[in-house]
Image 1 (cartoon, rainbow, N blue to C red):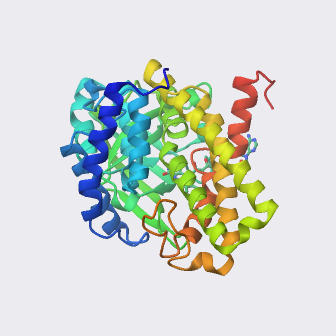
Image 2 (image 1 turned 30 degrees about the horizontal axis):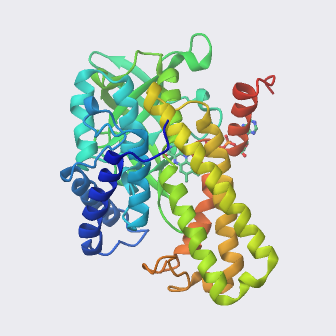
Image 3 (image 1 turned 180 degrees about the vertical axis):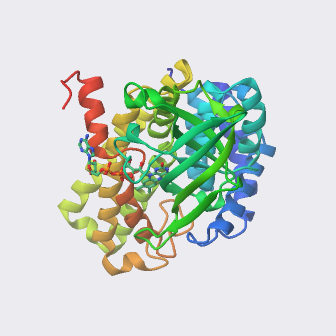
Length: 395
Ligand SMILES: Cc1cc2nc3c(=O)[nH]c(=O)nc-3n(C[C@H](O)[C@H](O)[C@H](O)COP(=O)(O)OP(=O)(O)OC[C@H]3O[C@@H](n4cnc5c(N)ncnc54)[C@H](O)[C@@H]3O)c2cc1C
């Protein structure tokens, strides 16, 4: 990967920057973080704007309906979005960042034609039905069963921690289709329409008070066999593709957001005088260096994903290091601001833009706890790094 910007990449940046300068200032106010129907309306409207302007699915290949941007253009895109304080993917996270990319790589032409355009246009929102009450880290133990009846699978079981289930149209669902042989050989990856009869959604409240995720009770839900991605009982292999996107490239937008947060904290510390303390400067410097290193790793992962179609094991390194660092940056914010971290206008932007308001820091601090659990815990990422990268023996 050549990290210098070519003329065409600079032209791409200029064109995107001027479009963002036109549209971002006139967006409607962002909805409350806990009003999920309003968030769906806001996020999908933004996605439609990106689509109409030719920026939807920037990292998706052209044959998947995306822009097929080069790795450098993808990074420029993320940088410019952050610079303009534009919305990020929001409730479109699963569809855009891992279900869609999985269908691009593993889906049939019919599945690509049916499911990809509505994701890119913001017409359909996706959720992820992988975890179960007794199958989180040990995902292959999942027990939600699918039995074939004619042209349908009939699905019964329980899923948990299903983010955005209440506002989703489709679910990437893992089911058990066989008990023979090793447990990961009996899993199948399905696309479940969320309006199918037999789905009960019970919201769960998070530490920040949001009903971000839910339990799903599935009772005889009929899912067409045509919605199976990959072969029956080959779902574990497809799942590895999904998880490599989820861990490898899906959090890159949040990395830029964390860099911006650190810049804001620095401005705030200078204003309050906390900057005079050597320990504060040391923490900011250390975290800044780690964020820069992660940005370099993100470039590598994006470059690899573009070359090979899917991110590699660097995905786990990134997920592990980033989610732990995000917690430390959020903690620095709370340490610096104390009770003022709860207020609406204490965290100025580094470049004169909008202050981070409405208790956004405390929201971010609370949510940072879940990042070392979501998409596979830190312990599981350490196991993957130890076994698959360092070649250490299995625990
Ligand atoms: C914000 C958030 C959003 C989520 N969204 C979704 C979603 O949309 N869809 C979905 O399907 N799931 C989702 N999840 C669930 C997530 O994938 C699981 O919580 C995660 O995989 C851990 O599983 P668990 O909660 O069952 O914990 P467990 O697997 O029970 O783990 C408990 C503890 O034991 C440790 N542990 C377990 N096994 C090992 C081992 N082999 N070696 C070392 N330590 C181990 C874990 O690290 C953890 O500390 C979400 C979770 C969060 C926090």
